[in-house]
Image 1 (spheres, rainbow, N blue to C red):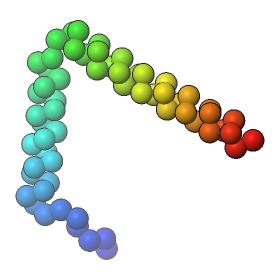
Image 2 (tube, one colour):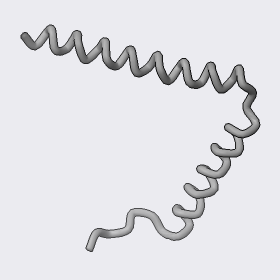
Image 3 (tube, rainbow, N blue to C red):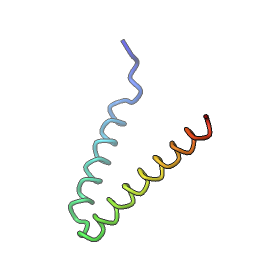
Image 4 (tube, helix red, strand yellow):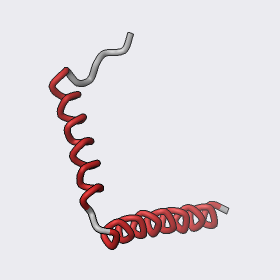
Length: 59
């Protein structure tokens, strides 16, 4: 049986943090939401570009 990494306090804290994040998303404007999503998409594209460069270098 694996050891528990966090006690009850840690679990409650992470749950509270998740709720706070969700609430923040509810209050954000459409512009903020689109900006957040576009930065996430940009990071994904950057990661893919890095992967292809590494693959090219390994050949």
